[in-house]
Image 1 (cartoon, rainbow, N blue to C red):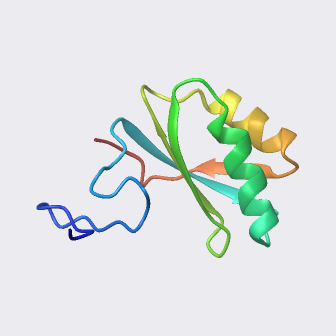
Image 2: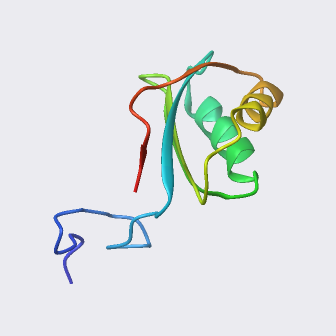
Image 3: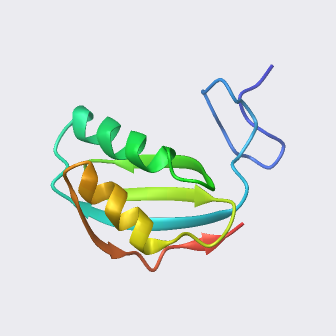
Length: 97
């Protein structure tokens, strides 16, 4: 079984061939420097209602949130702040899927 879907999406995770559906929003978060930061921000955002997937890239400072509906930026900001980091801005790279 290939890890790539017919559409060309590749995955090595346990959910091979699946992609989170919904609205994907990219945020810039400051203060992240390591794997612990990645886990802290990811865990904080994953607990929010409607959030179906979170990907954190410490190297770029970008956090990609996939949600069932339009995310509440204030709730996202509060969760990031509570984790000890700062939500700098919402990126223009956000899109609906």
